[in-house]
Length: 316
Image (cartoon, rainbow, N blue to C red; front, top):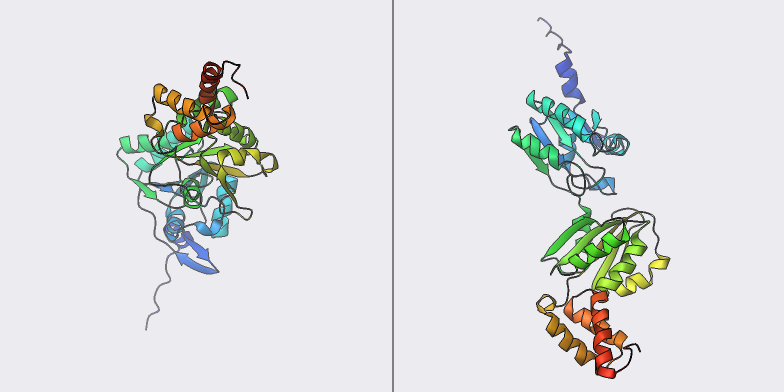
């Protein structure tokens, strides 16, 4: 009997053997990923949150485009994925996009990941997806971890309607102006904030949305995850003791029912009623909770009305 010829160890065979990932020392080989751009959600902290489909695709693509190769390499090394990593971030995107488009035009497969969570959500990628679609290439979404949805899930606030703001402006004046605009949105608000600004932002939130329920979500899915739930005023009051290391998601509950329909005249009537029975401070707190208007606006109007009602300077 003639012996069967040994298989030829071609580059294609070597490439196929390298495509795979490992879980608990079990090696799983995968096929080459379909041509196109694969948008893959990666863990926001706990590396165990990756999906099987994400692992299969990361192991099967020709290249992984990522913000920081050091961060993505922690994931690929954890699951023994032999991947080619290329940087794609806001600073090199103009130069990197044409190379990705060339690879796709040649029938290649490219995965796009952010440092954490779902690509394009407060991360680069929108222009790439737009140009890939315009060129007629396939785009696939592989859903998974998202700090926005994780925070909404644990905040214990209404989730039927929510507005994702992303990062607020860095400068205080611009941030206050934006918060005043956000205060008028009849939905739960979700925003990101850095540790070095979170205390200042909470103080400004207290001025504008102080009576609303809120949650501070810190280091979601990580070892030192912390969730604090209270009114914005209470969270701002305790902010001095807040651990500021890590990443924060702030979730602010919607304004009180009917707040957005109060006209200036209705606000005046509400303030007169409250001022007749309460101090300016307490009247403003009640009016902010019931009207949904920014505290600074309500406070200024309350002082004017208090002067008329009491014939004094309006302060007490």
